[in-house]
Image (cartoon, rainbow, N blue to C red; front, side):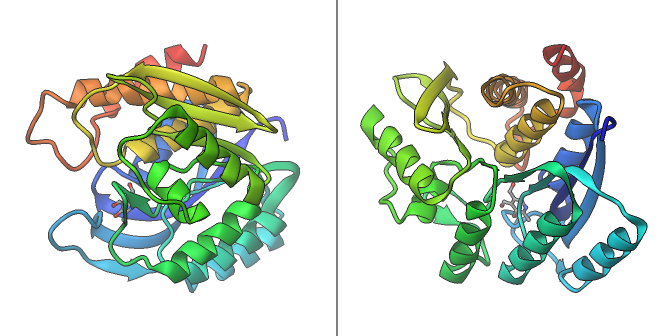
Amino acid sequence: MDYKRILTVQDASCVGQCSMTVALPIISACGIETAVIPSAVLSTHTAFGSFTFRDLTEEIPKIKEVWNKEDIKFSAVYTGYLGNKAQVGCVKDIMNECLTDDGLKIVDPAMADGGKLYHGFDGGYVQAMKELCKAADFILPNITEACFLTDTEYKTEYERTYIETLVREIRKFFGGTVILTGAALSEGKTGVAVCEKDDIRFYEHEKISRGCHGTGDVYASVFTGALIRGKTPFEAATIAADFTYECIKYTSPDKEHWYGVKFEPLLGKLIEMLK
Ligand code: PXL
């Protein structure tokens, strides 16, 4: 397919600068048609004090049937936050039936951060996510998610060997390329570890002390867009790291803006970074 089309499956949090409201504009800014399946509709993401949650699992097989009838195929399927473990099975079916022959499976196992699972997820969901990761060409866990996927103890203070072992453990179970985010290897820095085959490459940049919600979604969306634009996995990983860093830097003076990153004014910069 010359004109690339990405399908992203994740929730639509109506307000929250996460998931679909991040993936759609970012992948579109990368110059790629973006199709969506909303896994659930929420008033806001789950870090707000209260939220509504409408599960859309039943819709997914019906949407897939129509696409099969219409012969609609995708150059990549990129998954983020899924509403429940049943959706993992639905997503696997979509990956099997709706990708082009060389289509890519990109999985952000968006389920945890800061050592904890997000609200509503449990061990059963982690198991299901392990299976989805096994089917993927690229997985993009943060350190917490990598620990859940490999049953490794979560640490906030660690040496380089902790990250290397974590990445190698993931590679052992999940055959695809691993992009581990939030790997802090030296004082004042953070970065990503990219493992294709046995080779681990690191990319570091300055760390901003303030953490923001939704940075994982910004990162995975840029990575996906850049990769499908033709960048190598390592290039896509570094562009995503640089853009996410810029977004956090831009957001951090606004102490009121706690729920997401203000990436929208920087989309022009992203387009420049991809040239
Ligand atoms: O950004 C990850 C994410 C996505 N979607 C929903 C979430 C979260 C993180 O809390 O709650 C609904």
